[in-house]
Length: 316
Image (cartoon, rainbow, N blue to C red; front, side):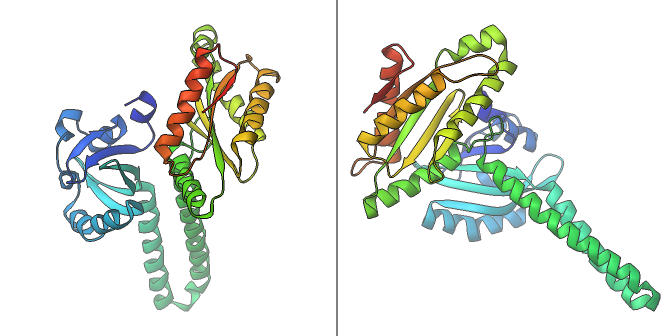
């Protein structure tokens, strides 16, 4: 597991379909106050509270079996010292289930505060007529906190789908959109293509200018890539210095032209810190393609671009 995933601002856990845990990132281990060897091969029930075990069996297990994914389910984890409310998203693929856990302590604090405000308001209403003004004030505060809770939930959802460094969508969002594009291509025969993009000699940038400048270069590249796409396209950061673009309704002939345009615009644009070039691997959907086969062809094309000298486009 790479460092970026290992120390991501959310817990990440992989388990087998029988419920046995295979691996977890450091954030997850810190959340549970466990070492890696204490969690490996344990059943998922070992980290759930008793009510959450029942909820997991009643709702999570049937949903993941029917749809191969579960979105926004609330569970409570059991650490050494406390119970931790979490928002859970999960997906089943390749015979295993991957989880993302977002702590929801702040959400519980808001909910408890809302409950207290409501009870206090009812008490004031019953006690005296002159409490009417206070009642209105408290109701206003209640509505404000509800809006804060809605905003907080929206921010948490956005965090789960965004790359924290560049602000682009992340690998998870890319995989969800890729599945939708594949479905549309299969059922409606709508073509699409992908560009796998890698920064050339990025290690040299970090070694020469330092990682903070390297991060700024990736952020600047993200802006440039966003400027290259249409509203219906998708650009995401896969990790490190690797990015991907899904080009909607784009044939094999057209994707070559677009990829070359992207490469040139990056190579000859003005950079705030240090100029970089990119190598690109392009691939277009073919009948019976899966996410794996399409990405594999794009990755092979990217390897060819690197092998032939970088700062070029290859197609498979």
